[in-house]
Length: 79
Image 1 (cartoon, rainbow, N blue to C red):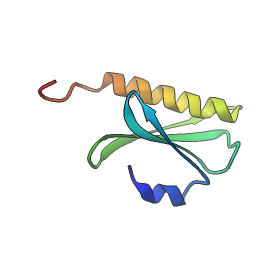
Image 2: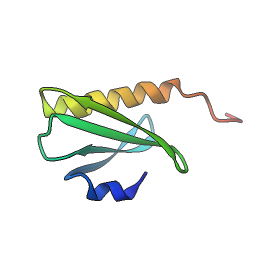
Image 3: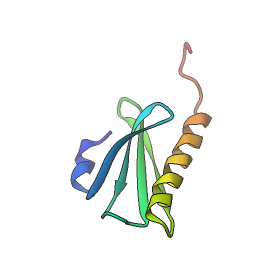
Image 4: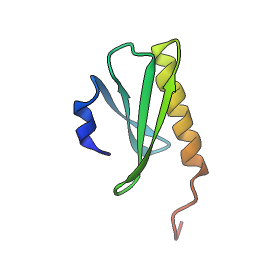
């Protein structure tokens, strides 16, 4: 996770997505756009964005998309 992002978003909440470290980020409270950043390995990760009419739905949708992406990742070698 890039911790510098904490300064870019007014709403920055540490979460987990499918057991991986993640953050939920919004530009301002009650924003209808939400970004979820998921760390998959050291220096690696992905971002899922969502926009919805309801601020809560935006983050839920972005988190759900992140869960689907994690489920589609190949297993780590040796697992």
